[in-house]
Length: 533
Ligand code: COA
Image 1 (cartoon, rainbow, N blue to C red):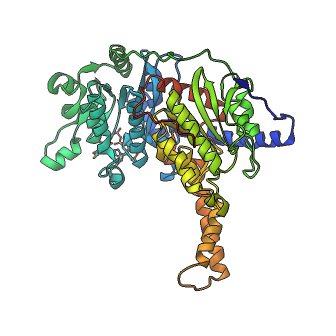
Image 2: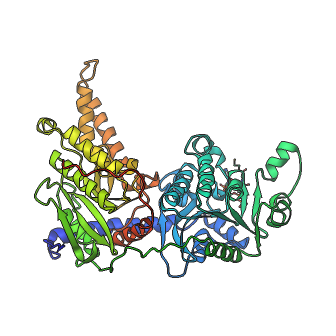
């Protein structure tokens, strides 16, 4: 396998100005992450502590194995929405090692609207459960949850992928042998009560933990019974009387230790080092990535420069380097694990689409996970492209990618527009993990093109009434504003279109974690032949 070389001059003006621009983006990302991971309002944090409760991220720190990584998912969910008063959407999710077993952790933040569920909270909860299912991981619920956020009920309660679906998943994961374990720390009402009630094993903390389908106020309204929360659904009652809880912990620390003990005896040992080669650092420093990504989107850069800073020893066996050159395909290792990489070097033409489809089939046959690095304006348009069959050739790429039974990872490093997003395994194609850089833009097309297309459409409007200059200017302004706003990476991550915004220099380690989780998951689905395209 050859070692990639670099054409990057770190002393050049372009490198420096790219780096400067990217550093500003990273400063913004770090500032926003600090805000989002800092729990709710100060007075609610203070009250939480006064009640003897531990903040959600500290609970997770105490739960996971010392010095092991915790892969947090979508920490910027709900960013910029609800007056920015819903940090991390009130729920922390991620993958961490507990007693030597990788587990998905789903933990409510009671300092954010009582841990109640907004639209993004439900999406984040379900996405974490999906990751648990796909990777065959136990789910640990750290419950402190007021159930559905009542004013948001139409967005969280009735539909297919709403709150009810989290319980459907919980039951079916349990039935398929994936343990569902809860530790309850606070008032868990209605939907919040069903999380532990549908768990295989439950720990409750004396004093603060409650489980009740209806809290004291609902009970008063419904049946005119006056009862306090502790009598109605306290930890002692549920552990000694109702049997809803299996273990009584005196403190939160004890509850977390009990949960660790339970996980230690799950009999789910997995060897995450199987199939892993020796790990070698890239020959080129990942920190240089910020100087490579052009801050002016119109200026291209070679995606091999990115690959050289992500893969072990910068070693890359390129497939078809001299054909379909607008997509770079090839094999490498990341943290010692085999991966087949597809990265864009321009728009996808018929040749590049066919090359991608062929490469995906090869990886599928060899059981090698796929990594898509998106920086794509889309598939080529125009008479020449159509006559060359771009519609069917791009469809072949989409088909090969959609049906590939190997794990898929996507990282959106630049633009990811239109059908290009589809071909490169965008969210709709259910990559096992999808992360984005602060330079990501996901939309049907860029703001410039969208504004011009809408002006064209107005010109061919069925009423044939010519538009005034003012009307055209208003259309242009509105479309541009809409596209700029909606293709902002924070808009995307806020709505869970990805599993989180990450820094370029962290990418290799995050991919390594994902690949090690995916390495023990058996491939499902039919094997497809390798058709030469
Ligand atoms: N819907 C809307 N808002 C809710 C909520 C819910 N289900 N649960 C909590 N909140 C809000 C509160 O209004 C309060 O908002 P504010 O800070 O803007 O005033 C904030 O969350 C904190 O609630 P608070 O009651 O002060 O916290 P607590 O820690 O003392 O109690 C609960 C937490 C969850 C036990 C309690 O809030 C509760 O019982 N909530 C209602 C639960 C319910 O009936 N759910 C039914 C779902 S179908």
